[in-house]
Length: 188
Image 1 (cartoon, rainbow, N blue to C red):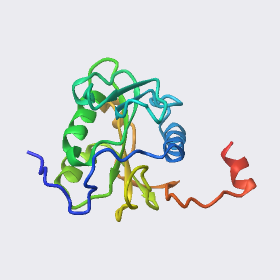
Image 2 (cartoon, rainbow, N blue to C red):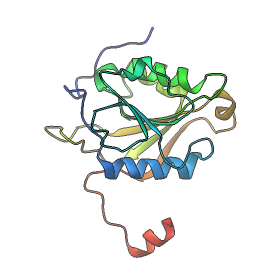
Image 3 (cartoon, one colour):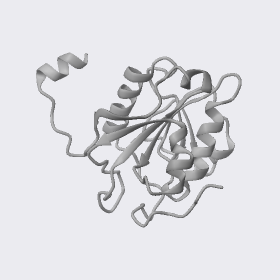
C-alpha cells in the first residue's frame, strides 16, 4: 500500500495551472528525448479545467474525472492535483502498460523524494530532475519545492531505456533566462 500522507510543503489547492510556456518547454523536451513513442505534441490532458488552457486536442475536467477515463492510445501530459498524487500515478502506470494501444504519459510532479508515492510509484517511470521552480498560474505564491518529470512507457519500451534518474537540460523557472540567438538556432 502506498503512503498517501501529504507533504507539508505540497500546495493546499489542487488546481494550480501549468503555465503555457512551461507546458511547451516540457512538450519539446519530451519529444526530443522520448520520440518514439511520444508524439510531437501532447494529445490529452486528463486533469484540466473546462477552458483547456494548454490546448490539448482531448481533455478531461474534474467533472469528467480523468481517473476513470481511458488515456490510451494518446501522448498524455498530466499535472495532477497534488492532494491525490498516488491515485494519478497508479493510473499512469496502468494506462502505460495496457497490452494494446497503451498511453505514453508525462507527469509534472513535486520533487517530494521523502514521500512514499515517490519511491513506490514514481520510480516505475523515467525521472528527470528539473532545474528551477515552476511558478504555477493561479497559485498565491511560488512553491518552495522543485519539480520532476516522470515519463511512463509500456514495459517493452521501458526495457530499452536506461533506468535511473536524469538531470534534465530543461530549466522551468518562471524567471527563465532568455536564450541567446545562438542557443535558439541550435535548438531548431
